[in-house]
Image (cartoon, rainbow, N blue to C red; front, side, top):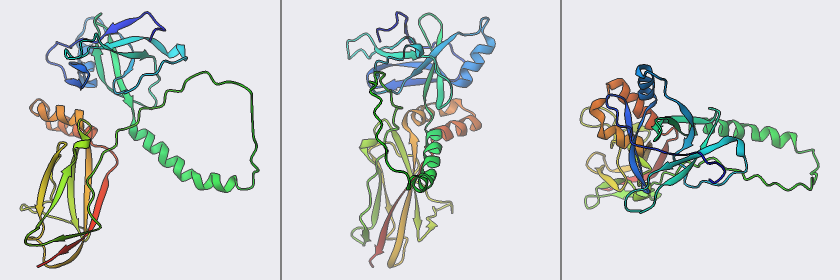
Length: 297
């Protein structure tokens, strides 16, 4: 990060009455940043429009030095926690186009300017991936009659490529191929494993032979969003007659940081705002765990 002399430090946003969130990370202090809605409200009432000087990827685990000088305009410092004894974690300040990126919010700097906190828009990348997968058969067919050609330009590639940040994997505890329940072992166990710590909440719905399991109110049963290292036990032996069933458990993942903040500050949101934030926390890809269920009586 020595390619520029412009260094800024993120500070805690103290103004009350605006929509804010708390940023948490293991090696950084907690600090508040304005949501997009809060930043809009702040801009409307400020005498001078706030100055947004660039973009910062706050979820990068690695920050490589880049030879691409034009897009790096400075350094942003997130304060380390007191336990570390260090001054701060440096992030590159860049000027990006909005494509492929999703704005999380806006953080205030020590000079009363702002930076836009962004991450890669996973939903858009998934759409692109699905399109590319759909085009694979076409390329295989069109390239079947072309002889391979070896090309050597003699040029040396010096610019390092900074790959997009990968979305963390959500882990599950799978079923055995066959699960047998009896009077001595009447329950199945649905768990959000500890490997998902600080990455995902997980909720589960149960389907028996393709039909959703109902709760006492007649609604589709759901475990609700389970935090990491938490499980629920479901007694299916009491609810089903003896026999064989196809059991499917459909999992929905939720972004840990968004849902944690939402749960801790639920009362300050309207029902519409709460649902909007819940939708933002819900990951677009769902998973199904299945087993052949034997009820022995």
